[in-house]
Image (cartoon, rainbow, N blue to C red):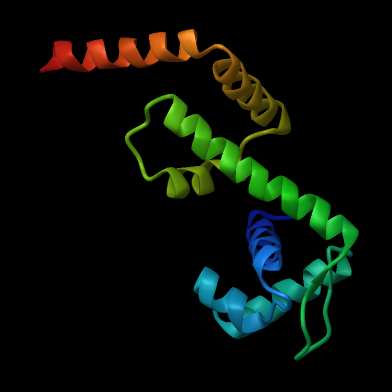
Length: 141
């Protein structure tokens, strides 16, 4: 079971792997704004759980398991940001999704996905919701 912190590391490793040939400890340290020893400690934990292949001072390679979970973590984050936009939240979507993602159950994530998917195929309902929000805002003014 991944802790929220280890999820963040794996998510960033996956993101890096999409655009870089090699992922290094310094890449992760800079992106997450954490000390190099903290990254190394997390990498050993991820390696011990078979999410990555890593040897000290070497490159970081995702295993198939790591790629699968990494993909899920990135997709979950994107889904939550999309949901926040859909409900017209007035927040920093990235920061809010980061705060939410580790504490929602899989069942809740699935329910949010269903809502987002429903709104995509039913733009009338999405527009009706947006109109409702706008009318509430204009009544407050």
